[in-house]
Image 1 (tube, one colour):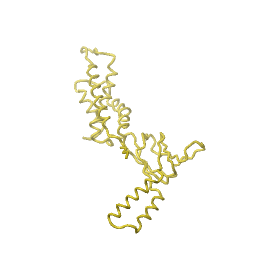
Image 2 (cartoon, rainbow, N blue to C red; image 1 turned 30 degrees about the horizontal axis):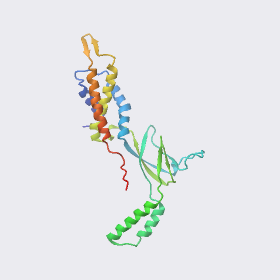
Image 3 (spheres, rainbow, N blue to C red; image 1 turned 30 degrees about the vertical axis):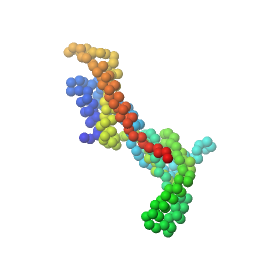
Image 4 (spheres, helix red, strand yellow; image 1 turned 90 degrees about the horizontal axis):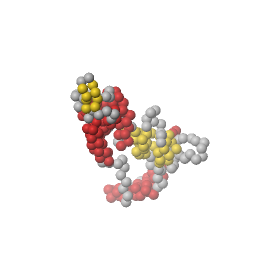
Length: 236
C-alpha cells in the first residue's frame, strides 16, 4: 500500500465509521492539521536524515571577539529545519596519516602483522586531539579546530510520507494522525452532548471519543518510548 495522505484519510474515516457518521472537518482541513502538527511531532521522534558538505567557504566571519573562531554555517534549503546534528564525518588528521604510513610501509607482512598494525593505528588515533563540535540552532556548527571539509548528517522534518519507514508509518504515524483528528473532534463537540436536527437529536458520543483517544494515546506513547536511541554510548 502506498504511503500517502489519501491512505491516511481512508484510515481515519474507516476508524471513525464515517460511512455512518459525518465529520465536521473537510479533507483539506484534516490534512493541513496533520502536516502542521503530527508530521513535526513525529519527526522529533523519528526524523529523516540529510547530508551537507561544508568547507572553509562556510566559515562565519564575525567582528565580535566573543564569537567562537571556528563557527561554520550550514547552508540548507530555505524553509528546511535542522532539528539536530546526527553525525559529522571529518577527514583523518594529516599527522595520523604520516605516522601510520611510516608504521605500515614495508614494516610488516602476513596476517598477524596486519592485526598488530591495525592495533597500533587505533592506539595512535586514540591519543590524538579530537575535533569535537557543537550545534547552535538554527544553522551553525562550532568546531574546536579548523576543518578543511566535513560531511554533516542532520536530522530534519519529513517533507514526504515516503521517507517514513514503512513499519513506523503503520505502527506509529497513522495512529498519531487518528489521535490528532480525535482530539480535534472532541474539542469541536465538547460544547454539546447532543445536536438537534430536523430529523431529531443526534448523540455526539463525546465520551466514547474521549475513551478511544485516551487508549490510543497510551499505545502511541508506549511505542514512542520503545524506539531505540540514535546513538549508543559504551563505556569501557
